[in-house]
Length: 421
Image (cartoon, rainbow, N blue to C red; front, top):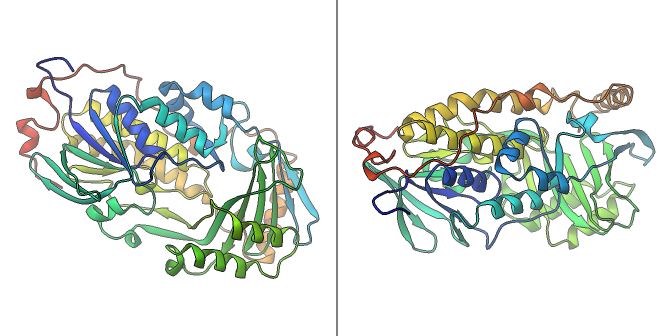
């Protein structure tokens, strides 16, 4: 740092998955000192596929990671849907189902995206692993943060990007249940051996209210199992108990055929089992005082939309841009919410109307879905869903010079007179 100058501000980002490293990347470019804290011992990998679509593709281009994401593109060839007895209903191209655009939108392993984001910023910002935020106290000039490790530090602002079940968000905004919108399903995902000869494809087995999916990505031996099933009320009692989660999945699929028993056995033995409810987060405000939320912590759309990663990337870009172009956090947070909320709500609405959902709960709805899938094989290639590109990014900005201490956005006299709110 040049003698006699200071950073635009100090920022703590909670969470090192997608939104966290992305916002850290842009804030560093705009002249902020950034620290990222992550409760895991390192960047979380995980090979299951995620999508990057629409406006998020342009964010990746501006970050310089698009070529490597294109190299990592899975290029799935087909999805085959099966009846309960294993007979084939229809085979379609995945982009026809999700509304992606072949040759433009991307499907990559989650670990490929998180790894690229980390590599793009690891040498420019401070990462603190195996720690988390335990307490936050806001005052006139910043936020005092107590970490689980016992460390105490102060920052000008705090950005919360640690997922749908964010404990940091709860410290500032209250319990998750007030923002949690349950969509009626639970799911489990895990790795298993590929003894089925699948490659670059998925196979989806259904009965009303239940689905079992085998998904093979690029490597012949890399296979992901996926269970999705309807549950009338969110099973809060098992969300923090992995053993109970496995028992619930096994009991739900105990009497089913096809390859389901093999999948249940693999789920019991896997080391990377992940379970959650299919839910969204809807918050009336994304900021309070010097704290703002982004990514799944602010507006998780659920995997049913396929837009979680894309919203995280776009939201990170827009929040950092607002902080770089507005004097003070209050104005910046207001601009971020004003410019992004409509885009978020439009994408959250892509879950469908129930009867056309991917995982129907009745015989009649399942047949209606099957008829819709059959029609997709006769439609022209997808041109994308308008929701994916409904937000136009502001002009790309180059690195910003460091500002003198008297001009720092978060320590100026005018901002210090602004009450938290």
